[in-house]
Length: 488
Image (cartoon, rainbow, N blue to C red):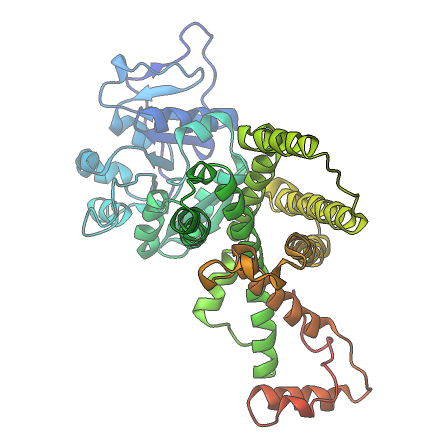
């Protein structure tokens, strides 16, 4: 159905390597046509040439083309359409009209629409559907529109190796997917041509999976910034008349960053714990999670990376503390004051232990933080087995949360007993940020605690009934058998 006899090339054919000897033309099955000589068309032609395909460009002015690809040819649209079975349409939608007179030459051909729009819902139908209406005798396939000219020229990376394909003809999609595979790409069949509008909207999306995590990060940062601003800066000015607004730039920021980092790290592991209890409540792991929980779990990687970013900022702010003018001035004044008053201070072993433990746990937690971030990179995670990846992200991830939470507890130590820290009857920020990670760790402890009896099936039934409200929790003899449901 797709094959046609190749017509003889006329004098309008222009070779792009005139200094070389004539090379026999490749067979039609290995020849690909590209309509469009813009950046994307040239880059696509270059990749096709490198993959061993014969490339023919269709142009309105073949003799004045500025292409410089060795081994390719430039023909008029009619001659180029007859030279190959597969044709890439690398022109904008508003220029599709030139294809109408070529309906006979394009009959039975496979047309790959690589176009995109400037905004969503720019036209009443998808570009590929519009192209199919103009050339009803051709088989239109939507694809390659998620690749840029730059990525085609420099070779696909892990981030843009996937190519989404859709079309009504299975045979046509197989032809396009074979070409994509030969180019080193991973082609994914998305279904019929009615999905084309969705594929055309992909390049218009700006960090779709990052929107919720970014909103959470911005919201938490703003909330704790103003909360600490009121407690520390405004409180000092209102009650003591002291202007310490200079602390906003470093001290206040160094409080906000670790608070937001710890909360967002907790948000990475809270949905997994909630999913575990939900599976236990339902008595099965084969029912789909609610949409809100499913969306939450899908953005855990982004939450973790943002959490790592705030942890990095906390480390950088902490490293510059010794060189601050305020700190050097305070140390100097305190030392001079002790000398003038002829006073000395005794070494407190408890404080030394607390300080060293606090710093050590922070360093260990940050080291595991970085390890989690590295293993989330596609280039690293692709070489790990699922068990290895799960061990790092789940086991070491909860250990990271435990170390960072302990780090924060040691920072507060016994200061919660002092009434002076509750300015305007409000708790410090670090106390608020400990609530969520403590809850997550407690719930995780319940999940991993082994049973104390051998009546495991009975225990599961009792817990399920208790979660449904049919039995009180104080009737539970032990925790459940972990063999029933696998939790991350």
